[in-house]
Each structure stands twice: as structure tokens, then as C-alpha cells.
Length: 303
Image (cartoon, rainbow, N blue to C red; front, side):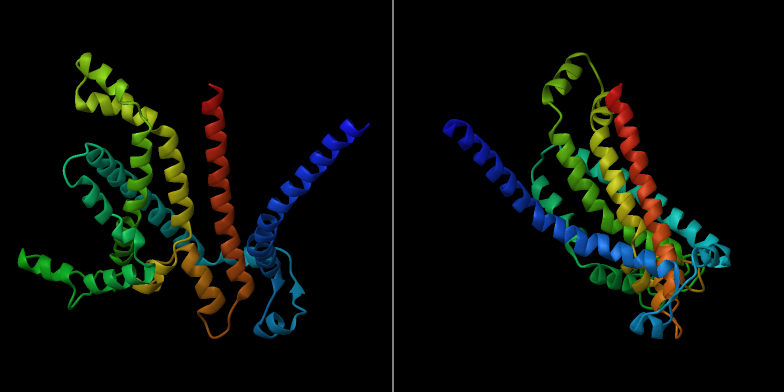
């Protein structure tokens, strides 16, 4: 009887310890994720004004805010700009990051120092990076136009031209995102056994063949999670665009993230409901992308 009671008490104490470790994480998720998401959904299905936002009592209107947002002519432009901003940024960030990871994997002299210097854009606060790029791309006093002038190219209105504003914020975002791709992909390369490369060299494989048939396939799981994290991060980028162009001129560089802020806080009469609806659509897009990634990874593991 005594020997049976002791293990039972140990099991119960282990369960209480497990719940004790789980409780802080659960409270954190509820306080900083679940409750804000619930409030955002509640904002999107009610007719909130400044008064009702403070005093309460906003009228329930269902999906009217979502219909209002989708019917707005700005929605198509913001969605297109979001897709372009995200897609072009991911392609260049991943491609350049992978090229740099393979380059630094050669472990030449000063490779560690140079690799550390490439982390500077990632370590800087976004407001510093965006302000620096705003100064560099300034039409009158920017160093980019000064450099173009020396080779005979007319100055470009990077931040004030509807044709160049989106390109400008994409360039800045690519520069900021390259170090993240470099670090993650470099870590993935370190997980590939050198014996495979040695065997390929004995078979007469060229550097390109090694990359095509060894590096890239074995790096696929790391590449997938890198692209997914980059996708989720880039979809919600707000700081860079807002500091550099504020989504303008007009709506030429407006994404769903900046449009949501404009509707919620950027006007004299804030529209909290439509702003929350836009952000919920952005969350839904990110969720769908995450589910597609999980499903594709499950299919690869089952092969």
C-alpha cells in the first residue's frame, strides 16, 4: 500500500510542476495575443467612434466594415502593393542571403568579421534604418542622386514620385532583411556533412553541381522556414514605409499595414472598425500562408 501511494504522489507532484511551468506561458499568450486579437475582431464588427471607443456601447454591425473595406477603391491598390512589396522583398532577400551564406561558408580569412558586419542592418532600430534611407534617397541632397549625377544620370524623385516610392521602400526593406536570411541559411549550411561534398568532389562534381544537387536540396527545410518567417514579417512591415513615404505620394506605396493605420489613426475622424477589419484581413493572409507551409511540410515528410 505504501509503495503504491508514493509513486502516485510523485505523479501528482510532477503534474503540478508541469502546470506551474505552463501557467506563465499561458497567461502571457492570453494577455498579449488572445485578448488583443479578440478586441481587434470586436472592433471590426462594431460601429466604433471616438466616443464609443472610450465610453463603450458601439453598435454591432456584423461584416459591414469588411464590405466597406473591400468595396473601397484603395483596397485593390493596397493589396497589390502588399503582394509586390512582400514578393519582391522575399525573392531578393532570400537570393542575396543564400549567395552570401554560401560565400561565407568557405571560411576564408576575415570571413567571421565580414559576416558580423553584415548583421548591422538587422541590429539597427527600424526607425534609424528608415531615416537613413530617407536621407540617402532624398531628391535634393541624397547621396544616391549625387552618385547618379556623377555618372550622368538625372536625379530621381525616389520618395516623392508615384513611380519610384514603392521601389524605394522595397530597396530599404531588402537591405534590412538580408542579414536574417544570411544567418539562418548559414546555420543550415553548417548542418550539411562535409563528407557529402568530399564524395561529390571525388566523382568530379563542379561547384555549381554541388550547389544544385547537394546544397540546395539539403537546405530545403531551412529555406522553407526562412521564407515563411520572412513572409510573415514582411506582410506586417509598417515602420519603414511610414517613415519613408507615409504610403504616398497619394496611395502609390500604400500597403494593407499602412492603410490600416491610416484608417484607424491617420485622419481627423478615426475609423476604428474598418482599420481593424483591414488588419484582420492581413492576419488571415498570414495564417493561410502558415497553414500552406505546414501542409506542404507534412506532405514532404510523408514521402
